[in-house]
Amino acid sequence: MSEKTYEVRTYGCQMNVHDSERLSGLLEGAGYVRAPEGADGDADVVVFNTCAVRENADNKLYGNLGRLAPMKTKRPGMQIAVGGCLAQKDRDTITKRAPWVDVVFGTHNIGKLPVLLERARIQEEAQVEIAESLEAFPSTLPTRRESAYAAWVSISVGCNNTCTFCIVPALRGKEKDRRTGDILAEIEALVAEGVSEITLLGQNVNAYGSDIGDREAFSKLLRACGKIEGLERVRFTSPHPRDFTDDVIAAMAETPNVMPQLHMPLQSGSDTILKAMRRSYRQERFLGIIERVRAAMPDAAISTDIIVGFPGETEEDFEQTMHTVREARFTNAFTFQYSIRPGTPAATMDNQIPKEVVQERYLRLVALQEEISWEENKKQVGRTLDVMVAEGEGRKDGATLRLSGRAPDNRLVHFTKPDQEVRPGDVVTVEITYAAPHHLLAEGEAKAVRRTRAGDAWEKRNAEPQQGPGVMLGLPKIGVPEPLPAAAGGCSIA
Image (cartoon, rainbow, N blue to C red; front, side, top):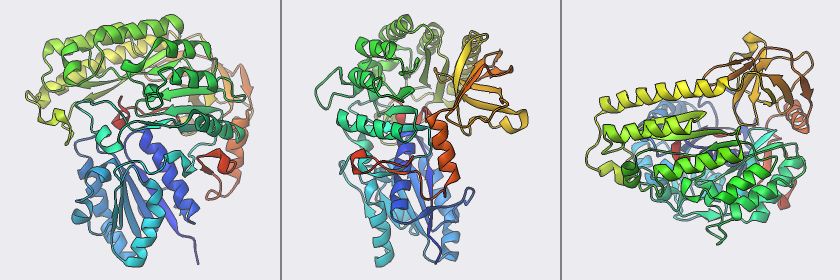
């Protein structure tokens, strides 16, 4: 009898990406193996890990479910599960609109997936189970890490903010922090297995400590990461300007393995719009944070999120955003045209902006940011950078005989392939010779190649059967684990 296969399809933010790693770990722990790449629904279990942030999220889900319906008819025993934020929001309608779905589960009970699949199989009817609050911190669950050399480490779940454009707090719940000891134990176990870069993850990551009553808990956590031998790079996403305090800036500047990179969502440069968004800072405070970060770390790369066309945004409001972008000089910005998110306060606000106006403003903002990004990247030409080799970052690497990776500040670097073998996770020292708005190029010979334990871990994983390794337990005390910077946007917007 052949092993049952699974496929997990992920939509949305970094939190969903990490949740999908856990879903994969749960399924592999239950005996399933990952379906081959390109299976496109041809698996025994297909799981949709959904996002509810975009206006057309449900249309996308039901379109994909519809395409699977005939495949399920032809494949006896196939099961389909829907989880994530959209499942939490639309719990009562998914099985009505798509009665061929077997399991619906929410953001708080992803650990129940294998049990719900088995129950649906035995009872031959759909299982819908949505928990209203967190049953167990997700990091206690088995996890199939997507990378052998870089890992997400969740430090909190949920959000205490009430931004009018965001539905996440209603779906993810109030912020709940992990114990610092558990976080550090997980990181130490990851490093022991070869991971050299970790990204601390939270819906509002720098609010860490509010649940335990320590306003400096996040800066203390950063400093504690600096004491973990073998941990080369520490990043975090996404912070909120409200909670970005000077002790965090000091910890970033004074902790060598905390990278000189900051992704901090602006959303709007207009004080009027920030107030309507219920963002608890104003333009002056935001720019003040940027100034202090640059004073402490002159080479820091700072990126952001911006929403164009929020209800009530005037041309003057938009010009304030453009002014803030000019002043902040972001390395790059993830820009979004506002669209109605059902269930959010902003969805029912007056003065919704016509789409053609939003589009015109959006194009102006993108053009300005492209110009700034290119100017900022040109400053890197001539610099010597240590680039951690990445897997899958350079789509044209095969044709150009290059490799790709990330500089310490997270800029994408394409570089000439060295003569010696180089693996993802290894570090190559290069000199930057050219800059484009969204990447850097190093066309000369590498100055140095450092083989790393992270590269060894990548090599070990790729030499073994794919279904076995990669599953680890979130709490290292349960067992030594077997051995990603952030995509911004989605419900990670802070």
